[in-house]
Image (cartoon, rainbow, N blue to C red; front, side, top):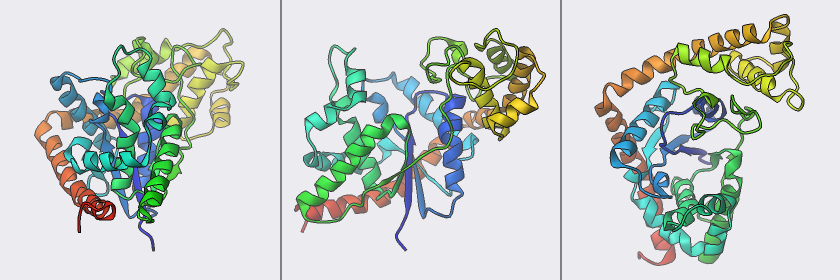
Amino acid sequence: MATKVLMSGIQPTGIMHIGNYLGFLRHFVKLQESEDYNRRILKIADLHAISTGFVPSGKLREHICQTLAILLSTGVDPFRTIIVQQSRVPELTELMWILGTATTLPSLTGLSQFKDKSKNLKAVPVGLATYPLLQAADVLGYHSSHVLVGSDQTQHLELLKEITRSFNSKTGTEYFSIPERVHTSCPKIKSLCDPMIKMSKSDPKIKSFISLVDSNEVVIEKIKSALSDFNPEITFDPEKRPAISNLITLYGEFAGISTDQVVEDCSGLNTLSFKLRLASIINEHLEPIRGTYHQLLSDESTLWEVLENGGKRARQIVSKTLEDVKTIVGFRH
């Protein structure tokens, strides 16, 4: 039976919000328990985090620890999943250089994400252009057969497939397999202040998102102040009532029930009563995550040890891939 390897990753940009949890983390943990995969890789993409410029060193270290603590608190198991800090595997950047021969600069800079991020920069760092090339090395270095990514990474995944085909074609081999995308079933979680945009921790409006480690009181306050409308009834209609529908979606995701069931269960409640019940459900779910998170952060040495061990395991895999690739292209006998 062919080896099936699941790969995913997340940038260390600070504490994650409930949209990250529902749309990515929760799904990854479910896949982690699946017997469908022989190996699971979850990268903390710290090299990608500096693609638009350096982050203050203390802040980056803090974000790396916070990200790992969140991963562990939400159920990612370092014994079942290789949690790897991207920068601990230098073979990936060497593989990235070789893969650069299998693509072109216009292919890298033609992606929407590059255009969006570069248009406001006076000087565009090389790292922003080579961002998807490093992604390709991440995926192919572990011979990943399946990749869990969000819809915003669709173009990058298609480029990855093109790079894979190009490398195989140019070298006359079938060394790399074309990875498949794994989709998440969770609908997009919208901002609590504007249901027309997705929830984002970069939103300057602090009440637009709920952090996974927000206190009970903060969660209640944010849900109470979340945008709704003048209709006191609880009905689900994303087109005509996007704000309350976003809250109903949140309720259903945390309660594990359909939006229809939410409406039925909350029939007769006014908006405030509904919001308070939603806040209670969210807090009940987040309480153990918050407790474990703060406990882990109190012992950063353990967190760095997890990353060191993950790096060693990862390098064993990628080193073999790199040596194979060097032989294929003629660097080795």
